[in-house]
Amino acid sequence: MKRFDQRLSTRISESWGNIEIEEFVGFLLPKCQEIITPEKLRQKIAEHSTLKVKFGIDPTASEIHVGHVVPIMLLRQFAKAEHHIDFIIGDFTARVGDPTERDIGRVPIKPEQIVKNMETYTNQIEKYIDLQKLHIHYNTTWLNPMTLQEIFTIFQQINLSEAMQREDFRARMHNGQAVSLAEVCYGVLMGIDSVNLGTHVEIGGIDQLLNFQQCRKIMRQSGMNEEVILMTPILEGTSGDGRKMSKSYGNYIAVNATHEDKFGKIMSIPDRLVGQYFRCFSDVHQQELDELDAFIAKNPLEAKKQLATLIIALETKNIDDGLRERESFERKFSQKKINNEDCIELMEKADTSIFNALLESGQFKSKSELRRLFEQQAVRSISENGNIMLSPEITVDQISGIVRVGKRRFFQFITT
Amino acid sequence: MIAYNIRGSPFATPNILKFGFSIWARKPPKNYLSIYPKAIQKIRKKEKSNDIFLYALVDDVLPKVVLSRTHEEQQKISEHYINLLPNLGFHEVHLVSNFVKKTALEACLSYANGITVSEFWKLLPQSKKKFSDNLTLAEAFGFLWHIHVLKAAFDEFQLTGLLAGIRSEFFYLIARKLLPPHDVYFINTS
Image 1 (cartoon, rainbow over the protein chains, first blue to last red):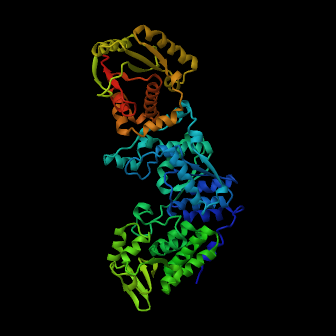
Image 2: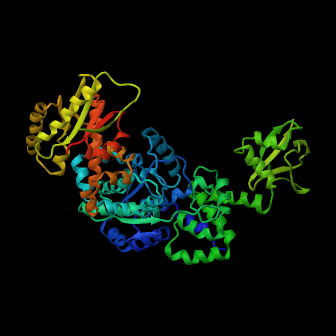
Image 3: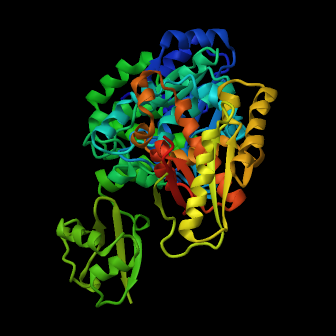
């Protein structure tokens, strides 16, 4: 059996200081949905031993999911190859609001919220990228002090109709929804960021394409060489319904989730997504893709386990942590051996109903969530006598063995 | 002379009313501007109060930038306003360069959040709409700057209202939602 988890995990902490151009590009390509343009990318790498690579975020959300990590994984590759990483915290642009993929205009964020979000954000991404390798900038630094003359010089070069030609703007206006003047200016501000930093390469999700094009235009009009853009795909969520990973769709893997939870969620993705997830979260080389895809097609379950192992290893920089999680997963779900340490222990009076006992455990968001699980026959006792469906009224003293709720939660009751 | 007016608040009227009138110091001023002090006289009669004053807000900043003028060139034009407007009946004349201190970009973009592209389009004169393909984002920025100037004037001089030519009606109606509550009088200038 091929072990992609072991092969790829050895690359996690590698340094690519002296990597050949084609070798490096071969690692970048699997992560990119689009590059504008691959030829220019090769040219820039050849011209600059240290590329200035820009990645910007709007600190609008605090808790992130692994979908947000996808471009960071690409950025990480540039950091490994010892390029200069400019990490832009769009504290200025966040107050304007990125119009990308917004059906309606976004409410701008308050400065104190930006500070709070950034702290939580960096705490989460440091699992995936060494913060020491990032040159962190706040774009208020150069946007705030701009003079009226400087602003006008740039804004005079941007044709209003052209700035409005974005498909998302047209769709919104067609649907009678508003597009604010601030949103029209957003891409220009991103362009000013690139001009100020002298960016060679910019990284982001494919949804940023229109903003990036504006950036390139601003650079061109400022007499600079246009940046090369590397765009990562938008990660599809775990449910396999084709929608992007998103908190609001409930199909996400939180960066702050436990290893157990992450492993379980990776195991729940449809087989067709395994290849995409491998590309996004590992340093797989372009030349290895055929081999990887053939392996996934032949052994989808094994490939998924290796992927989940690798994602845990990526976080801890240690494959053993991933392998341990795999072992635990296989014991619980393949061999169906549940140990006491897998269970949440609940001390209850003998006559307490299982519904109340579970509700008071704090493991469920609401009464209705728990009620739904009972209705779906997802609350079962597991013992030598078999796997028995439980009704909500049953009292805890009537239960023998372990109680499983949903796929991955286990409880053990101790009566007092 | 007064086309119509909108009250800032139906509940309370301050004892002293201070009206701002904003003008772009692009060319030397003309005598037709006397219509605004005359409008103030009408308002005084209507309100039965002499505590109503007119402040000229002369924008010497934007023309300098847009027309790439030197400080001296702009100063020359601005001085015409300083000399003429008090004679026409304006109670106070203020140059924008003296009272707008804040950095422009952030303030202007904060107003831009509250204005839609359709609203901006509505306030463009026909002459500009005809050549809309040539319009740049600077046009929109000029509009935001104007709101920034008015907001600064409200803060600096505790204005209670604005006078405006009826041709600028759309601008003032849109700007209204971004400025403190105020009266606005639209004046027929033709």
